[in-house]
Length: 94
Image (tube, rainbow, N blue to C red):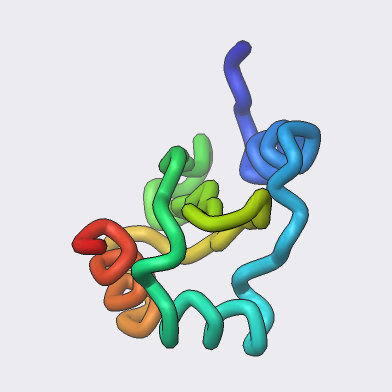
């Protein structure tokens, strides 16, 4: 199945149980404080068809100790938020 938009990617992940919004502050803080408890399951990179600067990356994240699953969305490349990139690096290093 080809997913053409970020919304389609998010909907597909939600259908798989990824229902926590890690872009919200308390959830993002949880990832930041305890990265060893989470892992990145999938990464989707989306580039807009009309604007090459319209780049988004979607992370499917799950807890390694329970069934907690969520989604983190960020810009890509120069539009990426440094704090999100730092958190993802910590998750990948755990």
